[in-house]
Image (cartoon, rainbow, N blue to C red; front, side):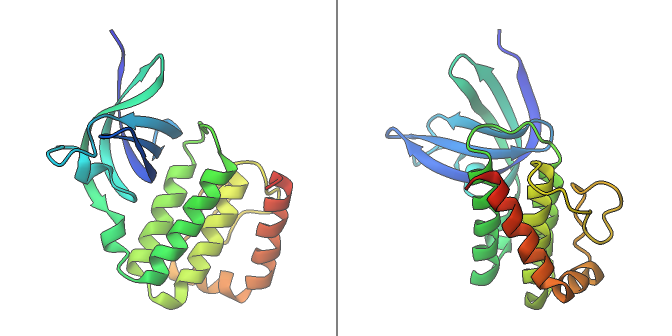
Length: 195
């Protein structure tokens, strides 16, 4: 009997796998980034389809098997694609999650990535469009720090741990004031990753 894992996760990417199945890149709160297969999810009568769309945050039931992870249950909590109503917010979310997926082509057991991405999505969904650039800079530099590609100091308001990104309005305004420094830092991290 295979052990079932119940965790909260965000679908970062979804690709078709066969006629009715999908291959998912899921960032989970407990297990970090993982790749999982969802069977029958592309079928028109699938009960899991709405909870496994790109940028869906759901309560997931996962099973680890010989061929990798498999999603056996999902309950939608938040559809971030819908909540990120503006094209600019969606574009920024896609850039940051794309960076995360490129830096972790396999699975990354870093559970600290989950609060960074959820904080970033909250900032994109709730703050003014002027702060979106600051949120993107904080998220990108935090992801690089968590994955070990940035040895710089923590973000404003983050304390000692670079994984705990600060997305408050004051912190984002401070980041925008130091925009060039953050961009240089992100570029150094990407260069260090070998991308």
